[in-house]
Amino acid sequence: MKHHLALVTGATSGLGKALCHALAQKNISLIAVGRNIHKLQLLAAEIKTPIRIVQIDLSQIEQRSSLCMLIQELCPDLVINNAGFGLYGPAIHHSLKISQEMIQVNIQAVMEFSLEAASALKKAKKPGSIVNIASAAAFFSYPNFSIYAASKAFVHRFSEALDLELSVYRIRVFTVCPGQIATDFRKKASRNFPQKLDHLTFSCTKAVRLILKQIECGKRVQIIDLRYRIMIFLAHFIPKSFLLPFLQNSLSKRYQKRS
Ligand SMILES: NC(=O)c1ccc[n+]([C@@H]2O[C@H](COP(=O)([O-])OP(=O)(O)OC[C@H]3O[C@@H](n4cnc5c(N)ncnc54)[C@H](OP(=O)(O)O)[C@@H]3O)[C@@H](O)[C@H]2O)c1
Image (cartoon, rainbow, N blue to C red; front, side, top):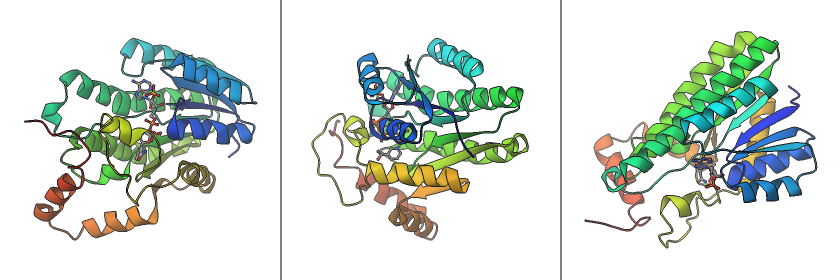
């Protein structure tokens, strides 16, 4: 499917920014969404195709509503719900406010923009694609990453089911489940707690290439990185009494311990 206008959330860094550059190279016009106007302006200056920047904090319901109106008005035929964040450590150590914001950004925004984009495309009788970035963490109950993993499980299940619901309108919904990608995600999730990068980290450029290929091939769900595909498969055979403490332990060096 040839796309003409793409909306990308979380366009100010990491995967979102790299996706904007890759789409611009394919001559796709952009609506780049982020909360940092300075970073959005820098992105716009780097990009050669027509680009509209939209400053929005996705944790704020009124600001999300204004983006929903813009989606109805401009009817992008590619919507990439990429913005998201996580926090390592026991959920009880995070403020309720930040946990609520995680749900707003990782779940609410994805659900609202997916449905808004689908309804705009359906009204215009246009085909289109919605790409929702979940995570390999979506496949696990993940102690010390509990809210994030559960939010991505929502993205995975919702997007996978929505793809079938919308196929009658020639609208596809693609779910992307990356493992660790080399972006600022981990630094933010650990609140800058110093740690070593491990060998499982995947390059952002490679991840973008695989996402674009997924859209082209029409693959509903993709787990990025073979190593994560193997781990997720093997995890089915491991008792949870062993698996969950193992996962919990795997993150124990990524955040500042508190009593
Ligand atoms: N990197 C990984 O290892 C990894 C693995 C699996 C899944 N993912 C998923 O991949 C997606 C992209 O993350 P990334 O790796 O590129 O990390 P990133 O570099 O931290 O990018 C996250 C983007 O989301 C934006 N964002 C966060 N909260 C926001 C809010 N309230 N309003 C508006 N924008 C907000 C950030 O904006 P600011 O620049 O303003 O913070 C940033 O542009 C996320 O959904 C993440 O969960 C990442």
